[in-house]
Image 1 (cartoon, rainbow, N blue to C red):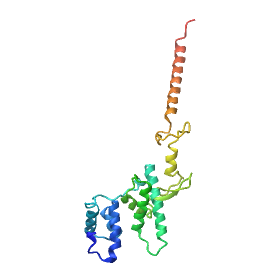
Image 2 (image 1 turned 90 degrees about the vertical axis):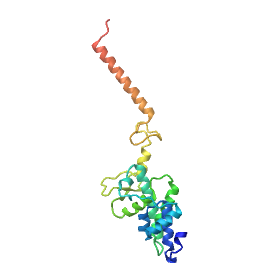
Image 3 (image 1 turned 120 degrees about the vertical axis):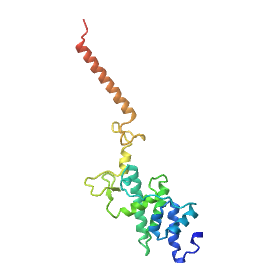
Image 4 (image 1 turned 135 degrees about the horizontal axis):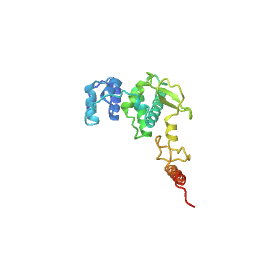
Length: 218
């Protein structure tokens, strides 16, 4: 790279990590704090890799994104599990590189879930807040898997995978329907049957009312 021609040999690894973060879409602040590379060099690297300087904008600051909807919570929990695995494997060696663990775990995560709403910036923020107790790891009461939840959660709850799986089942007949969501838990067939029953009840009620107030002449 042209931007790395004047770099000291001992600094090349951190510039390589910076280049990987830039290629994944990380903001300048994240690249700088993770590698110690100056903003000027980050901009130079970004122009070589992407053809432009990194997009300006605020870093993620809210934990709500990782909790709802259930799909976001599921993806966040999966990424965190992958990141902790890479962290534990790297911890077996003498030198642990947190940015390298972030890059490797994020690349593997995106290979599993290409369309995930978790980008590199949100993944970086998640790795920062998980140790501050803003989010905690909870065990699902049904499948015993680990997922992210709010701290000080008193009652046990389901993981997002169980919530998503059960939301696809009709609460009336128990059959699986992919179009169902948490706000629509009765399938189309059962709704039609319910409407038909309501119409029959209404018709019978009207017939009874008419028979009481307007008896037939014999």
